[in-house]
Image 1 (tube, helix red, strand yellow):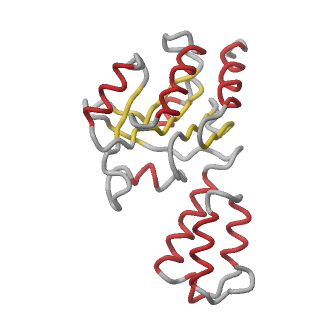
Image 2: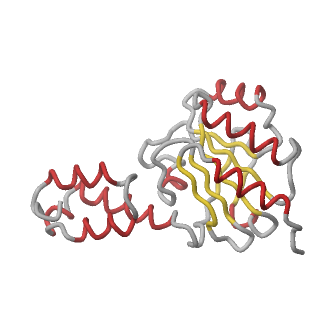
Length: 207
């Protein structure tokens, strides 16, 4: 990529590397490309994806989002994070690792909703009935649930969230503290996430 600054093939390689290297590395490779390559349609898309990776970095202030579920119940991140930690979990009913993680998170939080951590589940299911059945089957209906079945359609309502967070697949979990900063981000199944949640639950919650 560094040598082929004027090649569209470099863009294809960079797209492939998006979820494999850091945001800083992606940005450096992108900035090295010729202007006409960066200004192409694909070039602008990659630029936007790299920017979203920046939003997801540990220690950054989590970008606010508002979402409404099928029952017209809504959630706004800025309101919730003032009261508790927020775990935003991107998942799908067909994702076995997602559902297995939910079982373990539920166990750590002692099945009932824990006041220290609010779990917000955002599904990319295409079939809302499968989504609903999974929630009932896994006994996680006490968490907040939303479905964005139009993902990744451009200009859909779901893009309000997906334009602010780099989501390459599920499971993806983002943990946000009361001050609104990202203190954990895990792509795929992660024992470290469960350890982090367990640690938060055990520590006395400050007033």
